[in-house]
Image (cartoon, rainbow, N blue to C red):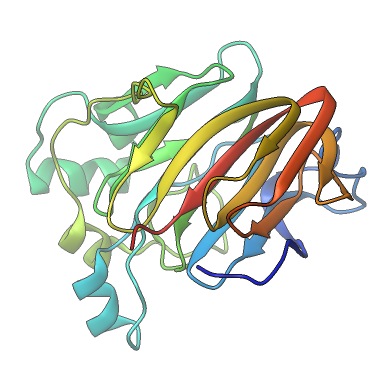
Length: 261
């Protein structure tokens, strides 16, 4: 990603049945249930996700399957960084133990797949890295930042009894990994939260003045400040060139994400 100067990416509000009306302090209160706020950078898709209900148990394809079944689409590897969590809010990622295809498919039909999954209580600051093929579910009571490949291909395996939203069992189990997942990621000493062929994400806290180290997206999680003199605040995503000046007197918590050259 290259850019001539700091550019703020405009958000797109996306209504979801499991979304929220109150998106503060990141965005104003909404009149319709908003589950996702999208920022399309061209090669990486950033979302702020707000949940008042459980998302479906789902899985995303990798690049080859997505390309051959969805008109050349990319696959969907993603990561989640938790910003806020109600007491008891949970993330499911992978299975508690390896399961057979027959057992997983039957579990999707009768709902017992929920108890087969490995559920993790989520807390602010947690990061979960979710490669394509990982069966997962985001629970209610969470606000998180999702960074993903630019793809919207999702296969629902179980949807908590909701009507009017189809399941995708054939495609889903064609790509699903039926084993365990390590759970929370451990941040690197340099602040790296995730690194994969599709994106690298690092966390940074700025108080005072800092120089942006490379061409990358800046995701403002908390606080407010300025970028080369232009005001920025929590909930915003910017394209920044190497050498941009970041300033904040109260302090800002940022994510920096980019595709490795």
